[in-house]
Length: 586
Image (cartoon, rainbow, N blue to C red; front, side, top):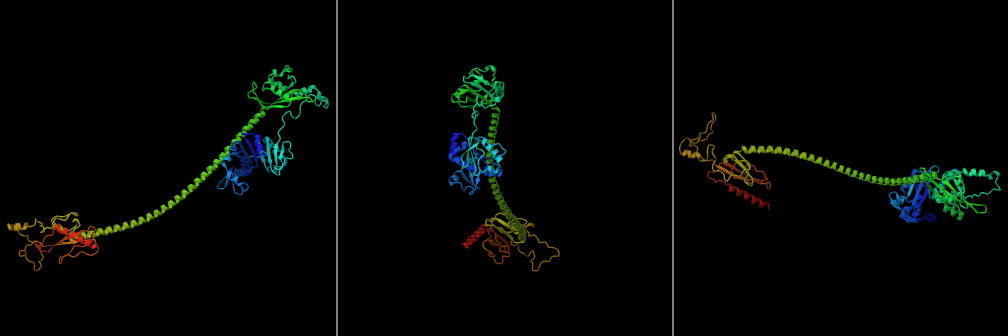
C-alpha cells in the first residue's frame, strides 16, 4: 500500500499521515521507520508529516520523549534499532533529526475538528470503544479528513459494513479501505426537456411552472441551443451577468458572459465534441463595485435527448465564495496549528535540553559543594593544628620569658660578683675584645673600658696613682718638699691598730706586687680548665662560652721584678690553646 500511495502522490509532494489514538507513540514511530526505509532519510525529512493524537496527556508526554526500553523494542529488528534509535540513559531514544517530522497533540474525535488533507489515516482499535451513532459521526469526519484518494487503516476487530457509500475495501484481511470520492455535479442525471413527459402528471407540463422554477433557482444558469445562441437564462444569471430578455437569441460569443469571468467558448466546443461534463473550479471574478472577489465553480453540461442526441449546452455558475473563504480560513488555521505543533515540539526539545543542562549543572554544583566541604574540614583541621601550635608557642614564649628573667637575674648576680672582686678581672673573646671588665681592671689599666674594646697592647708595670702618674711620688721625694712624702694614713678615732702592724715611718714604700693569670674559657667538652699557679688566690669563674672567650686576671702579691705579660703573649697563649683543641678533636 505504501508504494501505491507514494506513486499516487507524485514526486516532491508532501505526504500527510494521521495516527489517531496513538497512545505512547509506538505506531507513529513504526510508520516513520517504514516511510524512511521507503523514501530515504533526506526525502523523508522533506516530504513526510505524521500527526499523532490522543486524549491522554501522560501518554503524549511519553510519546514526545521517544524513549523506549528493551522490552518495548523486542519486536524491532536489530538493524532498524541500530539505524533509528540511539542509546540514552533510560533506554533507547528515536533519532532527533527524524523526530521533528512527528507532531503529537491532543484531539477528541467526537468534538474536535479533524486534520484535513490526510493521505493515510490510522485508527487501529479506536472505533471499537464507541457506539454505532458515535462511530457514524467519526467515520464521516474521517471521510472529510482524507484526501482523494485516501486510505483508512482499521483494527482487526473493526469493519465498515454500513459505510459502503464512503469507503471501498482494498484488503479486507488487513482492514485497509479506500475513500470513495463524491460524484461531480451533473453526473448523476442528465436534463432532458421531454424526459418523463408521458409518465408525469398534467401540472408538470405547465410551461409557466417550469419557467418559474427555473427563474427562481439559487444557481445562475444559462442554456445554449445547438447554434450556440442564448436560449435561456434564469433570474440569478440575469442579475449576475447583466442580461435582459432582449439578449435571448443572441450569439453566445457576443455576450460578456462568454469570456468573463472565464473563457467559456472553447470549453463549450470541447463539451459538444466529448459529450461529457466539464468543471472549472475556483474561478475568481473581480466584479465592479465589489470590495472582495467572487469565486465560482462552473459546470458545463451537455443537454441530450432521450436518444442521446445533443440538443444544447447548459452552463451552471455555483457561487462558492463563502465556502472558499471558509476553506482558506481552515487552511490558515491548519497551517497555524501545524506551526504551533512544530514550535511546541521544538520548545519541548529545548526544554529537555535545558533540563539536561540544569541537571548537569546541579551535579557539578553538588561536586563543588562536596569539594568545598572537604576543604572546609581541612581548614578546620589546620585551624586546630595552628591553635595547638599557637598554644605550644605560647608555652615556649612563657618559658623563654621565665628563662630570660632568670638569665637577667644571673647576669645581674654575676655582674655584682665581678664588680665586688678586689682583683682585676677582664674576660675577652678570641679577638681580644673585652666581654667583662671589673673595677679592679679599670684601676689596673688606668681608664674605664667599654664592652667590646680590644685588650691594650700590654699590662701596666705599676698601679696608677689616684693623684698622678706612676713614679711621680718618687720624683717629688727626691726633690724634697711636701709633695714627695707619702701621705699619712688617717686614723679613725676609737679604731685600734692590729698588733704587729708597723708604723708608717717604719714601712718601706714598695710598688704593689701583681700576679697575672690567663685562663681560657673552653666550649669543647665539660673538662674544667687548668687551675692557676699555687697561691694565685681566687681564680675567675669558668664557664662555656660560644665565642671562645678568655679571662685575664691580675692580683697583688707577685714579685716586683716579674716581667709584664704583653699583648703578644696573650695572643700566643690563645693560639696554643686553639691548636690543643684541634688536636683533641682529631
